[in-house]
Image (cartoon, rainbow, N blue to C red):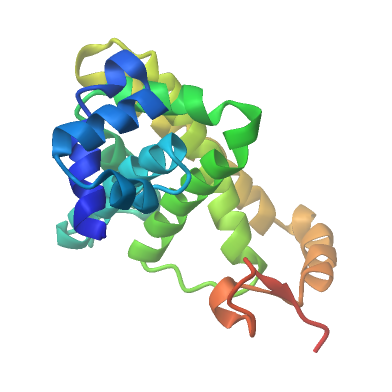
Amino acid sequence: MEQLRQQVLKAALPHVPFDGWSETTLNMAISDAGVDETLAKAAFPGGAVDLALAYHQAGDAQMVERLAAADLSEMRFRDRIAFAIRTRLELVEDKELVRRGTTLFSLPQNAGKGAGAIWGTCDKIWTTLGDTSDDANWYSKRATLSAVYSAVVLYWLGDDSQDNAASWEFLDRRIDNVMQFEKLKASTAFKPVKALTGRLFAGVKAPDQCRRTDLPGQITTE
């Protein structure tokens, strides 16, 4: 089934700039790939939305491979994050594929899946870079990076500078903003707030620490 999904996805890419991530594109891709229509529709039960998600997830998988093969040992951690986001975007061969996806996931009925796709990308970045947090920090790291990633993608889509230089400068500024906030959190003035939030979220655990596997997380009272 995964091989069939990849066949249809590959056949869909030339159609997306013209017809978007639509049912029209999905149907033409199935025809072009020469696969069984019933099986292909079963492989994408959510239709065009699932096709767009498959494209996004394929990009995430490529990013993970690149990061795993790169030597990041000499980089500061904030530079590793920037490198990961830049790598993810540089893997895109045609911005129109992402632009059409952004349009699709901006629709109210698809917004949740779009947010989930971004969260998934940021989770893979943190995990690949060795994040071991298992409490509320697991969520805060991914939420913060999701905001940075979303802003950078929107900027990048409109960037016509040479080699997207303006986008990488924008990325550095956004990460600098995050690092400034992290310094504030570590400061003496922030300690009372940190202590309060620490007590409030003491029972929050990362998904892999949960007893349930069908939920994104869990709050315990132990």
